[in-house]
Every structure is written in structure tokens, then in C-alpha cells.
Image (tube, rainbow, N blue to C red; front, side):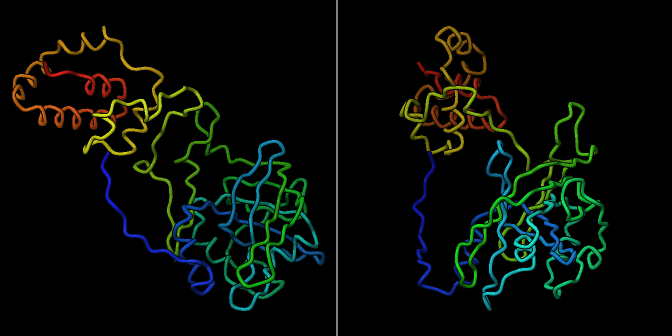
Length: 305
């Protein structure tokens, strides 16, 4: 496996300002999904705001959690947090790329009572089971009851975990494929990185990895040492190799070994063991990156003589 010794920058929260430490955390923990949250206060004033401290935490019950943190500069709380403490209901929306600029605009710190639906030019439609309206333009909307708010501190930057139980979901059927499953490219979600950076799903960025839950992989420790210590194969390559349940049988290897192209390679590197191994490992790497794991194993387990 290819390795290089990193040069580490090490720090503790007390070694720098909250803002500086926060910026490193934001840049490292990502991409982060965005919760575009509509809420309402006791006076009926609606708020709409995005939060990238957000994720799914339970399927049964279905729980989403987002965190409106205290402002670092003055420790003040955000309108969304104040609203859910008055009316414990929200609608959490997924942000598609077509909404990203309006979502960003809604993050502006308008004064209390200002309706970000109006400011961002978005359409508020009534929810079925909760008081806050939902965003018509969003491809996914979760109507939620707020079960609990967990306060993590009273200083600037302190989070407030808003634990939301999903009681209804709205899906734009345009994001579903022919089998009724959400298609990532149709959903077209955006996510936050550090600074002003965002990212989105593209055809080039999508890939699939077989889930180890469906197989009992042999593990990297069971890969022959000559392969495990390869200077050509990466950690990802080894991980994919190790996710097979068993190696090719001797009969399969013998059949593959008789291929004319392999015989030609043997003749070329008959007196050069190092080049023989290097060639096999590079060939196997190409097959692994094309998803041909079984073929890669057959290549790697070939003997020169």
C-alpha cells in the first residue's frame, strides 16, 4: 500500500479563538447536508433559515436533528431556536441546487418578524400536520414535531440540538426513478463545506461500494503480504479486495493462467520478478477501479513460473 508520512498541524480549542477552531471544524467535517427549516412563533410570525449542523439519527422513531448555534460574536440565539421553544414544530426541507442561492439569501440575519419566504422569493404552502408552512420549491419536506432541545452551552458558538420527530414527508415525484426510489441526480442536493464553499451531486462524483453487511469480507489481514505491501495498490484498492468472502479457486486461477496475454507477460518478464509483480499490480489496479474485483484477484494471484 502506498503511504507517505504526513506533517501534522495539532491544536486544542484553548490554543486559538472560537472562530478559528470553528473554521477548521467546518472545513474538515463535510460535505454537510443542509436543513432548510421553517418555524413559527407564538405570534404567528414565520421564519425560514438554513442549518448545516444537521443529519438523520434514527429510523424508528424517524428522527432528524439540527443545531442553531449561538452567534460567536455576541452569544445571542437565532430566531429559529426561539421559535421552536415557543411552538415546537418545524418543517425541514432538502435544498436542491436550483434553490441554493435563495437558501443562502434566507440565511441573512433579518430582524425579528421578517419573513424569509418573502425575502428569498419562495412560496409558502400550508403544511398538513404542523403550524409552520413548507417551501413549495423544495423537492423534499419533512413535517416534524420537536421532541426536545438540548442546550450545549451558553457561550458563543454553543450548539442547541433540536431533536425532531418526522410525522409526514412530502416528496416531489420528479425525483423518483422508475422503481420509486429517490435518484441522487434528480434530487440534486447541495451540501456545505468550509468557508463559502458548497458542493453538489454530479454524475462524475457518484460511485457505489458494495455494503460489507451483505458479505463477510476476508479482511485486509488475510490478503497475501506481497499484495498487502504493494507500492502500487492504494488503501481503497486493498479495502475492495478485502471485501470478498473467498478467493478464486485453484481451478479458476489455472483457467485464467492459460490466457495468451498472461503467457506473453510471463515471457516478457521471465528474468525480472520485480517488473512482473509491478505489471500485475498495475493491471489489477485498473480492474479494481473499473469494479472488476474477481478479475483483479485472478491477476494478483498469478505466478510467474
